[in-house]
Length: 197
Image (cartoon, one colour):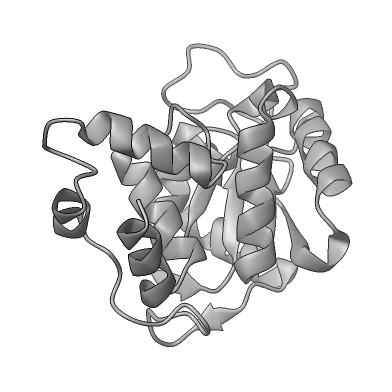
């Protein structure tokens, strides 16, 4: 596994699961075409892009290019890098039938291919698991518990208030929120956000 500086946008959870076995970085799901109806999710992608850069890694079918173009139209090009998987025909193991175009998606790519496409896209590979400008140990679930964001009475309401204040999707889980705070803010910035709840 290797660490890169940029966050990565993928279409769905299976893409995210496959990619998280290869690379250590903030991986954000677009939810497929939900990206067209979810301004909060687009704001999250924009924030990640501005803070650390964003690599768009969608499937190589028509739908993947529609989603890629939506992101490209909403986020300035200086914050984006584009990684393209090759056209490989077949079907993913979890599916009964291949997709409409018969191509494998991100979830069907072997780790070596994913690493190669990220390198060709210009991803910044890091030697250490620390990000420039986002230093310090990451927040933990214990920090969330101490801040009243999980495991206690009213924690759900506090989390919803924080999501609203940070303009993040309201259905984001505590674990996803923790990943965003660690991926888009330094330890000091994240602690300040939690203190100002």
